[in-house]
Amino acid sequence: MTVLLAILCILLLTVIVVQIGRVNELATKIRGEEEIQARANSRHGALSLVFMIVFLLATVISAMYYKDHMLWYGPNTSASEHGSSLDYMFNITLFFTGIVFVITQILLFYFAWKYRGEKGRKASFMPHDNRLEVVWTAIPAVVMTFLVVGGLDAWNEVMADVKSDEDVMEIEATGFQFAWQLRYPGPDGLLGTRNFEMIDATNPLGQDWTDKKNIDDIQPSELVLPVNKKVRVRITSRDVLHNFYLPHFRVKMDAVPGMPTYFVFTPKITTEEYRQRLGALKADGTPKYPEWYEPSDPSDPESPRRYENFNYELACAELCGQGHYAMRRLVRIVSEAEYEAWLGEQQSYYMSSIRNTDADPWKDMLFDSEIKERAAEFNDRVSQALSSGNASDKVLALDHVSYQPGSAELTALSRYQLDNLVSVMNNYPNMVIEISGHTDNTGDAASNLQLSEARARKVYDYLVGKGVATARLSAAGYGQTRPIATNDTPEGREKNRRTEFRIVAQ
Image (cartoon, rainbow, N blue to C red; front, side, top):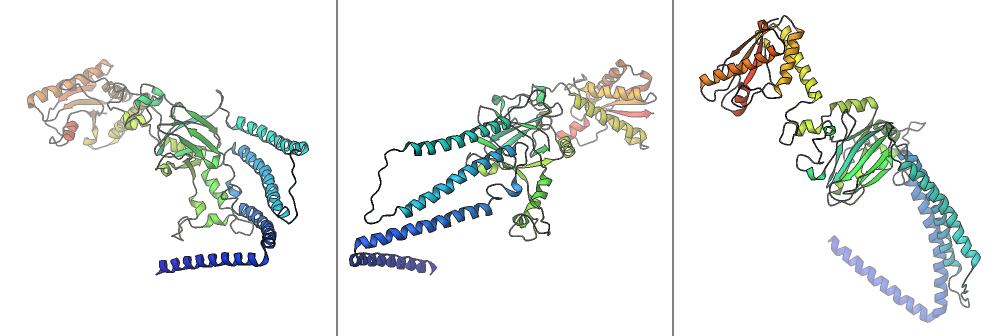
């Protein structure tokens, strides 16, 4: 029914328009075409002036109304140190172009009224006017000179790279369809090398794992930066053209495949401080920016206010495909202490995803961080065992001691934990231990017993070779007689193949 009424209304309007046209034709014939044309010209000229006034007022009023939302005034001033230079250039450009805009609109509509068609009036032919040409060439040239010089100054300031002796942190952002892959340096403060030919399912950035600078690099899920710290962002792309865009910080740089770019900026306002800015109150206690006090979820009036849910964001400013919207990522600017705490919680991508896999070129060695971590863990376990009165707590597994398959030959990595045991024996000179070897139930029981004894003796010999007195050591093999897990699964059998030591005296 609604559709039918709409169609009827359209048909009725069409009939009315046609009838009005016919009435105008009849009126023209009755009163004369020249008179009608003169009246139409006067009417259109007057309407042009009215439209000019309404149009300019609407332009100014709408610009004032939307200045905080679309022109980034009010609380949306720059959150980076260099941003004020860019904002200043935009303001200067807007000032001069605004003057030209208003003058040209006034002249356009004024001329439409003043030089409307009138009986007996003839157009003047002006083939050339040197003075006029000088005026409209010289004034824009002077204005453009100031704008260009100011723009170059701003460009040189904003786009300057860091110096070799500057205190700066460097991170990397790689765009791909449809997300950003972030990379931070670890404790060494250096980003490792990359090779696009090494990109695969387990190595999304093509990091060269033979470069030890890559070992501690992290790939966090969010962009977190410390306030008042200069940041240099390496910007790359893995597939198509993207754009690294941080609007609140006035940062915008293309991510071009095969051509690394960069941007240097210093955030000066934390996320929490920006929220407070958006939620500022006037002297009378009313919100300074009422739009930011609206519910963040329009369907839930009880949801947090918009300013409370505000976050900086990283976006892609290129139309990079159908999933372009997914390039958005939240950004947090925090204090130096908060940043250090967050950074301490991150684990390097190598350690979490590459270590001890087929892609790991360092399988036969431990890094200093691993050595220290294992030593601290081992010492803590021994300390707890010594302080415990429970006999079962005096038995500790040497989790990182392993052997060549089917033999008693120690693997290269076993020496690290055995060295930890040597240190413990030196730190506790009265401690006496029994070293025991164990196997799963695969194969012959007698052979398993013999293998476990040989493995325990191998550890015994290693400790003696490091200076531990034989009177403080003993070795025994128990074969498959003391399982700690089921032998029906590979996981259980692996747990049963172990080397332990028992604290006999302390």
